[in-house]
Image (cartoon, rainbow, N blue to C red; front, side):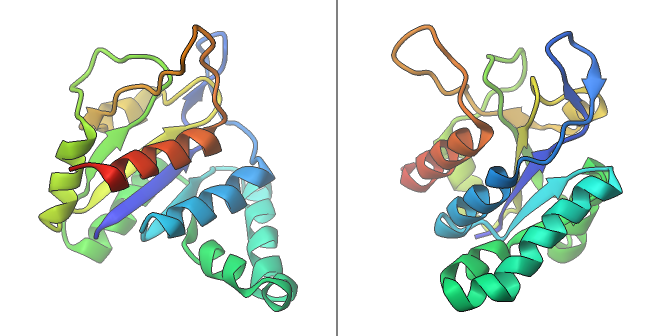
Length: 184
């Protein structure tokens, strides 16, 4: 299965609709890597243009590759899927280079989008045909700018039982990958 995932820290919106860079959240890296590995993602790209922020991710990876590996070896196995990327374009180019074709890029959002929607069964069909798929998760208030123009489809937003709708990105990541694994 050629499933790739990305967590965008740039370009994303803030609550005022401005395009910004968000900071690394340590829990996202570890939790999303574990979920990604569990559900068959080849990689989890952390897209972060700031060097000092990427250094945080590198420090976490080093811990699980050394000291943490001795304590809990399977956490290192999960963290191995984490790749750092300075830009969304670099992420797409890396996948294209590995797979010799551009991935189908599927965005996620807490809000419904005026975009080409795709359901989980359709994504599963792409993966079953051995087509590379990149599922993109935004931080802040969602994917923004030039990244939006590169997205081929959007998955439906995750709805709860009431009007409150504010999942952490790591929770949404797990739900999306679980739904994808149970499609068809």
